[in-house]
Length: 211
Image 1 (cartoon, rainbow, N blue to C red):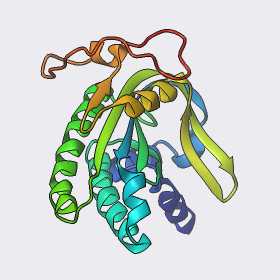
Image 2 (tube, rainbow, N blue to C red):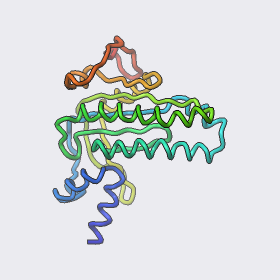
Image 3 (spheres, helix red, strand yellow):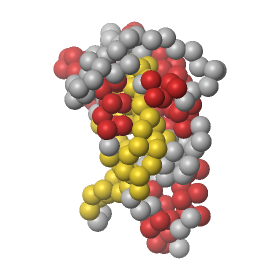
Image 4 (cartoon, one colour):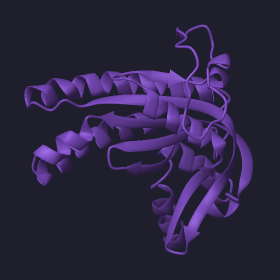
């Protein structure tokens, strides 16, 4: 039982409770072998964070990040996403692994919209304090290798592949409060979502413009 508790605590770093329950039912982390999987990846990054962190005290930076991470973490759990990492003012979440989620693209889109609303709520207080911070999102769907990386005692559950690169570049290119979604992901969304084309983007690391 103690071993199972330790394993549950380890998985809790990456997966929301409902995902952990399914993983444990299938045999736990030992069953999470590396595999190729179709996933939808979401990147988010705060805009204006560098200038903000340069002019306020470190304690206030940490407190502001704490608000941001708490709100985003609650949405990740709500929509059943897998958190690869929080990296300061940015984070990466993916869907459809380690458990199958047939609506993985829609989950990512709904989560981004909910997170954007949460940020707007947080910005009321941030703006009152003189903090000019916003967020940009990028979403892409594609195949990746999914599994644990690292070493004993310090492992991360990650996705490796070009799908993560494009999602990250879309996040970088997004404007304030903007959600950029690739053509591949948009093609898999239902009619409940409305989007508009911004043409093709020349993104770092990609030879062809990305619609």
